[in-house]
Image (cartoon, rainbow, N blue to C red; front, side):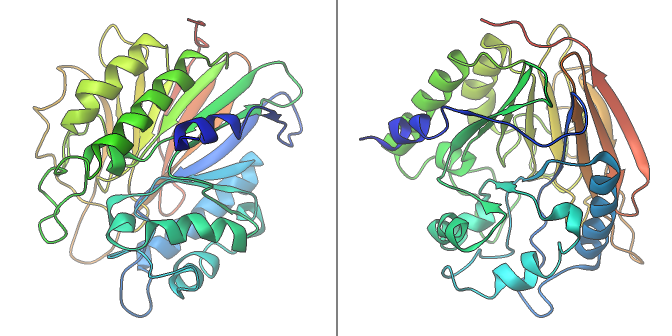
Length: 328
């Protein structure tokens, strides 16, 4: 059986999330993976973990989404690697962050043993990465509304970046066959979705104004699928800042949340996205302090609110989508 077929069968049931009302909430962060030397964390990562826990408590968050680059700089060696403890388990210790973490893989994870991060699912009560790409449908409280999350492996689709010059674009998929299988699965999953809200989450951005900028293969192949199947949002990291992009005359929102362990002020690609599409950007940097940030999502049957926070928990920006997706 092909991997794509296996994954599509694995999540046929709707998972009912705990909630005190007809709502669902989660927090998200990307590029949170500390550093490769002792103490294996950054100051900003620790601040983000603390602030995000407080937000998760306030919102009664149901789960966390982690958007890749889980371990800098070269991923993990095996499932027993101490980085799982030093950079993850010992950092995000708050009670509000003990529910499931839906993980995706980033380029730095693929520099190491990506399959070990998948295997760690069997060794943790909250780390959840059952395969390179997967999907899950979640109920929104006690309502009939649902959220479908579609987690993809953008490194399989677009290839690795250069490990020494990270500003270079991905070099193309290592396996054309694996990329083709995943593209087939993505379209099939989106096409058959009946969810009220449909969010695709990966590591590389479709659009970005920052150092890495747009990912050409995702602009060419993923963006049309997001439009065709009325996807609510694409959630990603890779560039180390916070961005909200929405093209004019489009209902697809691009939420970039890649500030889990530092921020980068680059706006190198500000002219590489469609005119008028940038709604928000946050990427402070100074020599005296680290900075970071994360994102929170609140969903009901009729609206989705997305809020960006700094590493101190300060509110930076909010936007609300008031139109649930139309079924194709």
